[in-house]
Length: 157
Figure 1: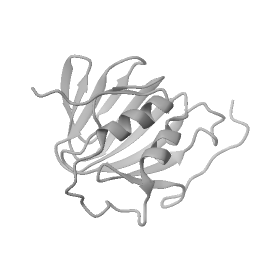
Figure 2 (figure 1 turned 180 degrees about the vertical axis):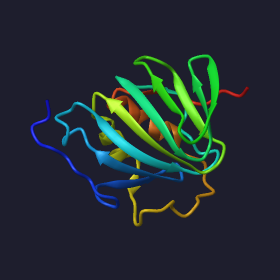
Figure 3 (figure 1 turned 90 degrees about the horizontal axis):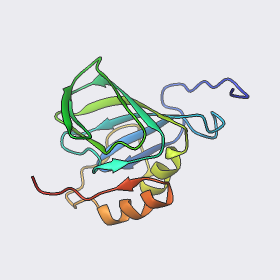
């Protein structure tokens, strides 16, 4: 049970730019006594994370936009109002098929520390200037290891 109630207003809290997206912490693991991390992510088309497995579960609610979710060996398209729950130990990734805004709950908490280390502080609450450079997946894999995340390189189809 959390020791204190938690309220986060729009535009408050930590925010990071990563993989050309905006990742906003709505509830950190510190604020929930480690019980969960809740993040709002705005991610441009084609800029989802590489395949990964992380400790705990992940629940994703699509607020705006569309995405293609790869959960284990299944692929599911999603849009506004759709909800995905990914059990612990499941290899997964998603790819936005348009600019997508999602609300993600991780249990237990702690993954916010990964985003803080892997991303850079957002200068504004908007998508960052687009980078033409390919993401440094090796760097993400190494940072992920420190946070219990098993991240993989994409394999050609």
